[in-house]
Image 1 (tube, rainbow, N blue to C red):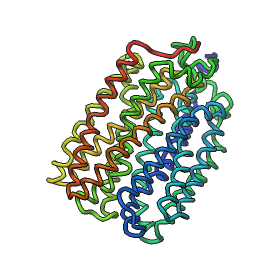
Image 2: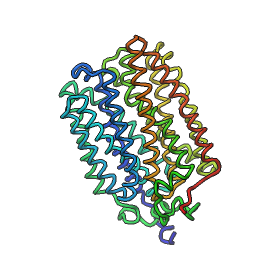
Image 3: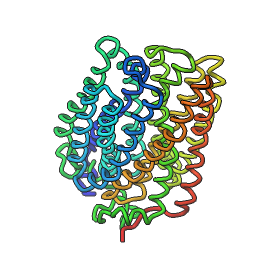
Length: 441
């Protein structure tokens, strides 16, 4: 750090960038979750069954997983500005196009295109955080932008039923799809990498690049070459992240696509009434996302813990916070809002977990490979979601609903939700062990 940088008041433009990726993630989740509030509408108007809905849901996940195969590497190659912009443009087009189909096959085609394009969001966002934030702030920045998933999930139930009631389901896709085009204007006007950005002064640039540990070969070392997929798959750290995502991402997919049905089926709520419990769950999860980023920062700054220790302990705490969801159905028999509370706590714990598992990538890998690793893990998470939908939701929900025992299906799912994080945490610790950062070459 130069003398002038040491004496200069630090600019805070990195938080503007964090705001940009927060809004991108919000729009990303609005576009993918709109359909979950139209399930009953499509059943009535288009004659869909549970199996039809799940087929469309699985198609989105399959193409999302396929997209993640190449999205990370493409973004590492193109850079965040162009990569993020292209991804947002394509998923916005796919979102609007959904309004112009009305068959299950048509929905599978456009939702597949949406999944393919939306795969670029998280690799782009994680790479942006790695470029703009030092390690001590990355979990908080990730928690903030990742809370966009919750805000998107809150905005959707509060707006989509109104749009559908007044203008029809097609306009729900058109209006939400157009949001991405608005975001693109701000992205290209406001974004550039820190070293080239006129709004970043010397003091902030020095802070962003302040990480000194493990400079030889890894985190924070911009001179390190981008690692290939073959190289990345040779590291246990990659598999720890991938398996963690494989086991826990499907839980969030379950909340996203099935919570409206849960409240409609279990408590006989209409779509407009069910939107409030769903919105409350995601409001609680927003708190978890931001607090989940704050806790490891507290351990690092106030307790003096090493980054990976702070991350590990925080994630264990969040894994235990999911356990109360086991009582959701029992509590719901007393009062539906008690079920909302425990599901909300579990969703908040998931988002806290998510903020930290994403940040382990930039903790352990060179900046030039963060999008690729995020893509690998995201692909595994999507594959987990596909298997959960295919082997559990599609068969189990159809069977138990037909038998008049839909609550049994939800009991089973909540057991899966409660156990996934502890199992993932144990496997991750066994794989990482005492290993820290990945050294290229």
